[in-house]
Length: 115
Length: 111
Image (cartoon, rainbow over all chains, first blue to last red; front, side, top):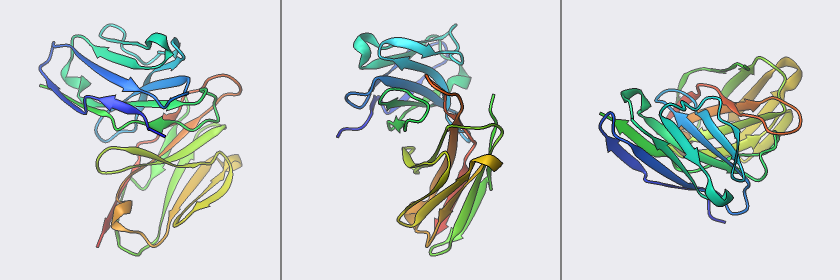
């Protein structure tokens, strides 16, 4: 069974530029998560989708971050415009149905450096 | 929101040594997971353990839900065990809930 796929693996941009990340969850998983992991910290949830609907986006900086999950499968996370403090690893995860007792499976992450 | 504290923050071991990592949490949880983040950044599930004890090879975990802590044991450590170990918890009943991660324990196993 294929795992969670993410691209690109690395991205370097200048501040005020825009960037987009892509995630393909495990086949059949209804729930998709985007996390931000700043160096030295644990991952922090940005947004959670159930199929193509948003369940939780309370920690998403909506003035610059946006995410969508069209057709309930792949998802993209966009930052526009980027700030220096957005430098982090962006992790995508998926789970079968999003229940509180489920295991989440993580992709390899996208490392973003904003100069 | 729920607070998750992990200790120690850093740990250096010689290959073959045993170690215990601790995770304290501030509220009742219905989901607790231990993850290993390898040096390449990949997060791997180790255990789903909101209560009780589980073992998988050289790793085992125990969660005492009533006292709000979980322990991860690593026996006969190997250099491949190096990385960051995270504890993550979720609260809530039915429906959706969010995993909250601790800051992790960074483990370095030297040959």
